Image (cartoon, rainbow, N blue to C red; front, side, top):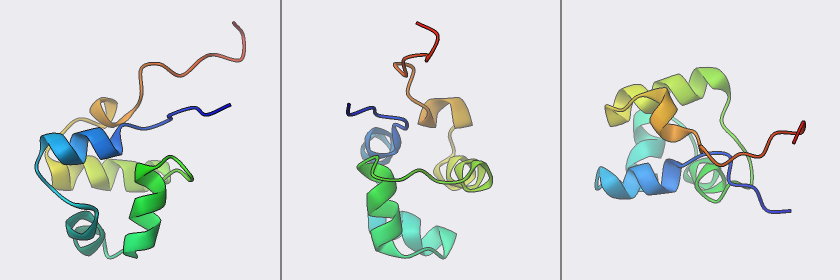
Length: 72
């Protein structure tokens, strides 16, 4: 099952920023940011807050609203 846990790729496009730019801002490897954008892996909660800060968005904007609950 392919679940999109974050909207990072969408938010980067909306803010006209690139994976490379975000990686530089966070001091992370570009491959790591790419994995976050493709939902192959997820950033830590602390990093999610850092991403929101450098992109000038709310953390909620980075989280998918379509995550199915295990209780459904």
